[in-house]
Image (cartoon, rainbow, N blue to C red; front, top):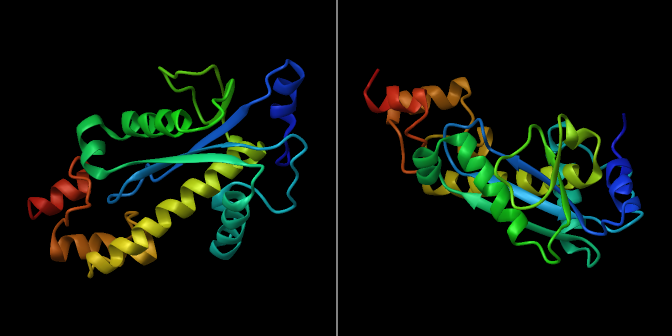
Length: 205
């Protein structure tokens, strides 16, 4: 099934005018924040290239991000949960919290949300969870792009602050290069101490 507004239009037909797509980026990395975004697209929105952010090149993501975030017709918001809070809550709860915060920032307040993946409990707004939603719903795909580009840019900025880990390249994911740097240098302030490879590096294992 191609990316479209089919799910949004079903809700629109029920009289729900403000439907937001919600997605996150950064659940898996060993360092940095998790970022969630929420997007309300205008009725009739179409885009030939918008898709799950993971299926897009960096250049295309950046171009679509610029389109989405500068359009007067598109309402969007994002929320960032830093590594310290991830360690305190655990990554699943931190991701859900980021999603709730992103939706809370939207104006107008959505009447329904489409969430990528499994249901988020609790959630302040009626939701429909769509597994693989970022590849079938334009709203979720837009949220996916905004969350991914925002987080990638944060990690590029961290690369300058914490040289030696190559955050600009791997964005904090547990690549062999990152694991080697973690073993060599130990964790830095943005590493997630609750993640096993980081704990092991901290203990010199």
